[in-house]
Length: 267
Length: 265
Image (tube, rainbow over all chains, first blue to last red; front, side, top):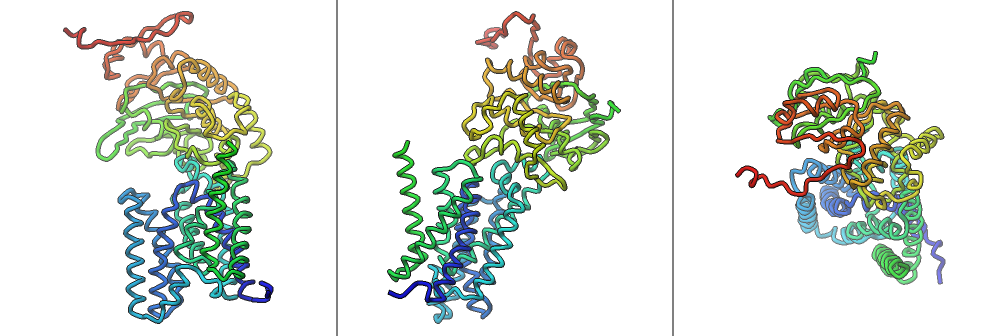
């Protein structure tokens, strides 16, 4: 049996997996505690239209997806903040429009179908060293921002109104967090895909919150759990030849339900 | 210097096109407890928000230590506890962290707690008798305990002025006396000026040195005894009410039924 580390694409996958584990778990805490998982779903599916535009017009699909994701995220938050349209309506409209745009553009150039499948469901073979350098730099910037503004993001999630009482610009932190979510989704697309990324943005914190009720513990434990789950998924998928993204989500879902059942038994 | 503590001069404020407060003039001196009373919709909460700097007057001036509220300098010197707690109760945070999270550092950014902040937390916790709650989760507290936590959070920045909007909400009648005694204690201990908005007139004699009656404007500002016995009080208040002032050892009385229709026949 060949060793998993003989293959550079697997080493890339593990490095990428580690970056995604750290980022998604950190952000997962804010998504779960603020009950905004719909934003993750909305942004990730909106990114599909951006990918298709990039592929259709011949420039980097990841850059166009990133721009599309950020614009969608800001639009969702902006509409929700101003209470002009219900959040589920905004997401429903953007989500459908972006998917429709993507499908239309791809249908016009049929040779991109295989690429699109990789973006939708993830493909570890597609993670290159250049990707890793870009992801590494972006991940570093995101982690620095998250740590620098951690208290402000906690205040945003715990008591946004009191943050305003203290003179904090909570709108700024809200938009900043949304942009961070958008960038994290784009970084994660190649490994787990647009369809499955929502799971990594929700399950880590949802699982650890079953056992812990202190954010100072939930964030690091979510990261540790995600690293274990993602590495396990990559390792098993290598030997079983099943898609890694799907396997990671299935393992994570199993861990979540197992935790939930154990917690009920313990009670 | 004392006269410059807090002053409202010809303050007007409107929501949309409707004036909520008109021509309010009020001077508050240091180290007093002021009760703000008035009917619902009379502008009490708006008055508190204006003093906290959360709203800006459409006309007139509010000065706290000769500065307009809402600036980084005044925000740390004015503690504000809103009427309705806006916290996400399911958020995984311990009481001590929830209190320390309100600590403002330099440049208006939230700061990482230092040794002196933790000492301040101990001091506040002792004064409010919440030492045994610090390690608990915020959602596991009773209404009265939660109210004390929000007051503790407002005190963490060492304010000189504490604004409380209906702090008795959520506290049962039996615990209210103890709660107001605690407020009186922190007023003395931390050298605080406190402004309490309330619709419960029985709060006033328990704790207040002054009373400000607001019904779209400030129609009375005096000692509680003067205000509650003022001949035109109920007219300005906008409701028929009879104030009964009784001695310390006479229990509070509750009216169970009020048959307006029968009385009017």
